[in-house]
Image 1 (cartoon, rainbow, N blue to C red):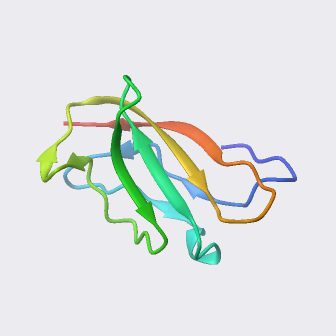
Image 2: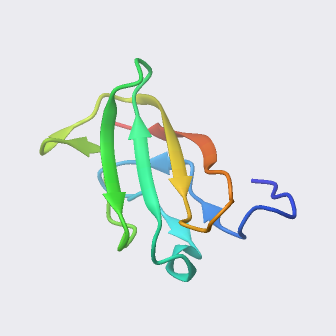
Length: 92
């Protein structure tokens, strides 16, 4: 991921599987973060406010999500900063 001067220096993983959780390195510097993951229809399949510990394995309501592309929004909680938007891939 390429960052502009206004974005935090996060290293955001692009793949998720049973054995590989979604990783976001550097997030601990933003304790007030909010993460949302949506499917291709815009339905929320994962959300967490603060405390994400790189432990999401692509599940929704304790069931594995189908393989495919999902979209995330990461709000770092910094006043006046735009959320970080991107995509990730669930591998089955």
